[in-house]
Image (cartoon, rainbow, N blue to C red; front, side, top):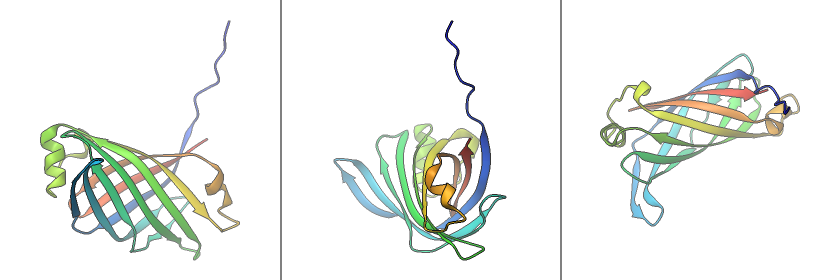
Length: 156
């Protein structure tokens, strides 16, 4: 008889609200329709991580079909204690063709109709936050016209 380990538990890391600017349209490339969304700032609130999102990052998107978008955001968080955390958040966003088109045009779509999942990776030089360098995380996202709301979870 084969026994399997228990599935991992998830612990809420933080809710991140990322303020974004208008998309920069690159156009249709061999990798899909490329867009770059500037990250203007934001907030980070959680029991394990809190602070602010610094301006200067971006979300590099490839819209691969009418229903599927690859996302790859890179930005920096400054914690309330002044520690710097580099974030690379990679994932996918899928939904109906009409809903994905509405998002691409900056219109509101009910987040319940969109599958938006990611796997954030963190890098920091902070000794207190070194555990961010050595653990895995999962994310659930929602896209609004002026912001992205993310909930990140530590995989235990």
